[in-house]
Image 1 (cartoon, rainbow, N blue to C red):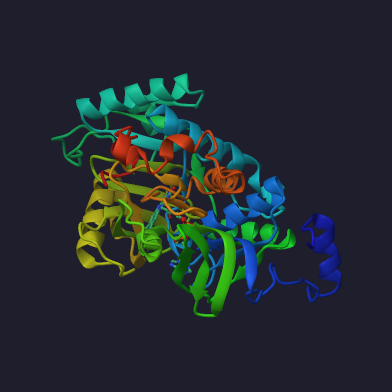
Image 2: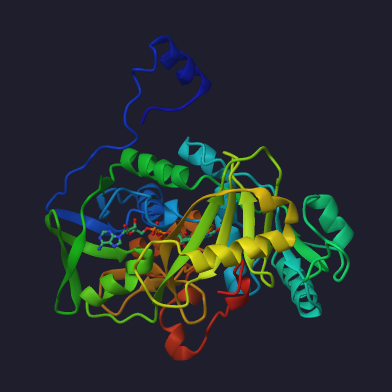
Length: 421
Ligand SMILES: Cc1cc2nc3c(=O)[nH]c(=O)nc-3n(C[C@H](O)[C@H](O)[C@H](O)COP(=O)(O)OP(=O)(O)OC[C@H]3O[C@@H](n4cnc5c(N)ncnc54)[C@H](O)[C@@H]3O)c2cc1C
């Protein structure tokens, strides 16, 4: 792998930047792999990277039906944090955040992690109680968390409207306080996919794009390979990491998953000069927003109420999100919106992921991340690679096994999302 550094930049500048090589090879499928990973999003690529790096398994193919990173990885609002309520979630998201903190150095690729702080606003007495409880729970789990009163919120985010209700220009939902995770923030979504792809490729992983899995082969209760748009591939183990299409893929092996696929929409404004240097989320007013490095405001919505595989934005959601945004930031009222889109997220009954073995031997799933899996990319890839390599759940992944829907040991994180999904 060509290492990136200041010296390399200077050397290539002398050669007029003609000597850079592609980030990863355009691999063609081989007849057999030890592990086939279905889905070339951040999670699939991270899984392949950690399989090669941590477990010495480089005989891996990542099969992606389109180009890598154009699924939810390239469509999300890039918010990263670990301030989840329940211990199981807090541990896995914090594991991920710690990996994020060293990721650019580890991959030798700038993932543009910006730990600018994430505010979760409280607008009602119930929000305040819930926010304070979350801060306490987070601290008990060793996660940085603070409670801010309205004046402190205003100091942290001066552009936010914290006026009390019923005055001229007053807010309908006054800001009564907020939780703050200073280590939370955003990262560049494409860079995460590209960085993992480059590092996995360097360790021998084949990244095979434009290769759609159309069937999963099983024999005698064991997985034996996949059929794809580029031919059949035999495999000892098959890992499904296909986000909104996880249930479609599992069904190919006869497994019915408790997942629902919904569109999740987001939109961006025209780029403006820096106005917002933190992430602001409000469950009650129902919006989350940050400003990208390009200057666009990145605005997220809740899931569409219906099941669908259409990755499109829609006017009612845009109208609702803009109304919510203006409630918090009246000064944005003259901004123009640039574009909107959707990704297909796989939502589980308790809004927590499903990581582990499926009831077919050699078949594994990392899914159900729903609306919040971008932040989990490094951690999920790390624990999933362990689960595949050892055929045994990683301790952090164990509570997230599919069996919890039979045992009842659910991890209810419906309240953890930026908006009430
Ligand atoms: C609008 C929006 C905003 C979001 N905001 C946030 C946020 O702020 N913070 C956060 O933490 N999370 C957020 N998320 C969720 C997050 O994006 C996802 O949980 C995460 O990116 C999932 O990563 P992945 O690699 O599993 O999925 P993906 O990137 O979707 O990768 C799955 C891949 O599988 C491929 N695939 C599907 N079927 C097949 C097949 N048959 N054969 C081969 N390949 C196949 C797809 O093409 C896709 O590339 C958001 C999601 C959306 C849509």
